[in-house]
Image (tube, rainbow, N blue to C red; front, side):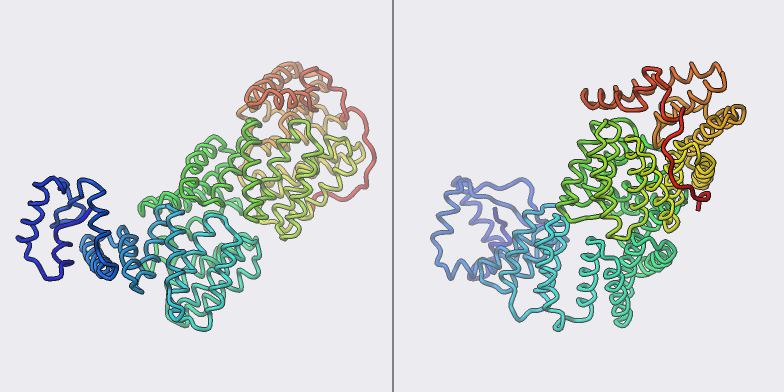
Length: 626
């Protein structure tokens, strides 16, 4: 296709518009050209050759030198026309191609613009091709352009999860450091800091972002200061330093608003919401993340709006609002896939698996978590891998595969220890408590539980600490000599869950206390502890319990020992819960395995003379909860 105004400026002698119109009309009348009813450029008529062969013959008939001249003229016309219509990025690839064929050194810069534009609309293959051509054409003496091409290529590799190629680009960027201007040195520090961040090297990321803050401040670039503070705040969030993270992110938010950087503002709000969620302030988390989501929505950035949705889903999950969490996550997955962002896709899949496991859809959970593990391993994301391994362990534990559950939980524990990630270490140790209890190794379960409680002291979340105390309580109650200690840990779990407003595991903890009282012969006290729970045993009311079937079994046994006729009603509820959950598993073999594990089989067969009825092996005593 071509335009009349382009012909006028590309001719050897300047033609008047009337002459161009007359010539084009003669060609159109002879059936050689077609005029399109609408033109892409205002004030210009758009034409195409009726047959591509005519176009090719006309082009091939030109001398090479003339072709290069005409390509150069075409490039300038496209650049001017695109600028006049405000669509320079849209036509950057066209300008770059013409300049390339004209052997014009300006082609490299236009290919860079084209690569950025393609990446912005998730045309990642096109972005890769244009950035590669920019790298080929960039002058060895133009350090700034070479750096900018490498920086755009590094961001593309990060999105695609190509860590090897990303690292190559970072190393090439670093070799240019001494010849860069201060702003690009800040950009280099930020790129290196983001690399350290995704590798979970938080000390390194903190140091690099700190240097970026200092250099940007020295250059009086508050926009870059805000960007560097954001990276520092993100790092502190994942390094489990919520107070420092909150302060850093608040400063980033201020700088972003002062300098008109809504992208940084939205991310600062999202991470402030993450900090609030991590520390149990769920209402504040929802408020901040909704602000971030609204801001990204106003910008028309669907991908970043989806990252806010993922954080909303995480907070919903912690609050026990699982249906809302799943709805939000299901909305994000196709957006991340379309955007080609593998890390974000893997996070959403892992979170979906967590929600599905809680809701009993164990088949879907296993499918999603396997995919999430494969991607997170490929990306080298250790924290995501450990989190996904724990979801896999939960599914396996609930479907009778305790060996696989142990392997995955142990691997997650090793990763969390290597990273110094206390919440993950608590979760891993608690999952291993459940594994040991399924196997009947009470001593090992108690040891794991005590380790989880000790580590939980250093975690920032009352929710994590509550689950550690709950898990240890489950282990201790199996030993007749340690039941007072079990009661203390169940009570502490109740307190911690209440502190963050999480109801279901709080009720589960109270059932634990009732079991202790019942086993000690305090039946009136046991029934009194159980009474508030009995109205909340419908399937939806059990979502979020760590061991829902064990919780139900505890209710039945407490009532039976007390001679309370409601035990029959609760047993019927327990069986209905198990059958409904099995129906939702989504895989016949997994559903059968789910019904066959303890205590599910015990409830279905009414075979309640289990370990709680007799003393278990003896383990070492300690004081109450720490």
